[in-house]
Length: 386
Image 1: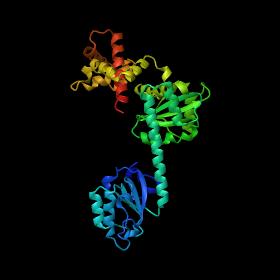
Image 2: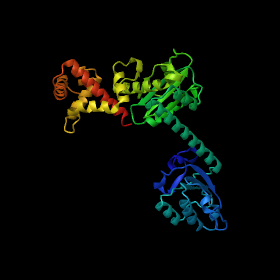
Image 3: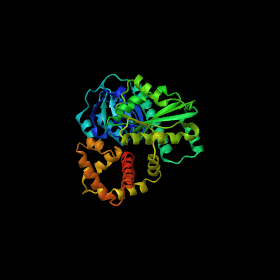
């Protein structure tokens, strides 16, 4: 976490930043209390008083009779690598201008308590938040490995043991993606379902949220139960795209289920569908595996075939029309509606596209090549830059 995260805790939400606004990015690894350490009457080994990357809490009692001690204290905290000073305004409501100016110059945040917050409670909440963030990072690291690496059966078993959850025989996965930019808010709402997952977990990967559940029966209706939970918690789903995996043996098929759900959600988003089961995909599975196994080769094909449409000098309407044509499965009328133009305009554009990319192909071969190139292009745009 950093100082900005620290200020977002429930107990610190009323804190005020009085100096060092440009230092809120500084890492926070600990929270410590300052009492009289910087009083000249007390002799400490200065470099062992506080650990680096700490938020230091203080009532500034050591400077009650000597405000001039404050500047020296802040200078020492900066030298010791502290992340911020947070003070309770019982002795000083406002700090001397020279202290604020120095802190601002050093990008050292000074925070003023909002009320009568207890030091111990601040420390406990900060440590609890850090522990939660560490576990989230651990889950994301594990998920990334399962998604992107070829994992052996022994490695799968080891990873499941590290997750330390009471997994059942069969695993089911749903991947959720938001169609707007407020993904953080909906993710937080979905995480509220975690207590219901006694034999599963929720974690994130590449702007997607994975809901993983295991069950003793392979016939478990996971998607139905999931939507019942979402309705129970009044979580709106209109702007969320769902991708579902098939069921697999947890001990052997865990990574496969994750990938299926993820790519099903990507294809659902491309085809503008609210949800999609991986088992309902046809030849798109081949494109998914091609892109997953050899993205460089896949994109070489895309850039070579679609080069006339991707050129900086090309008419942008042509590429947009090509994409819509494939998404609408070659239905000229639906493409025209989506593009807000006459069907004849779409026919003219498609004739031009065909002339540019595949002038000698017949209708079937042209559509096949264009569909493969466009879908790989969309896969890359959805995954490659996340």
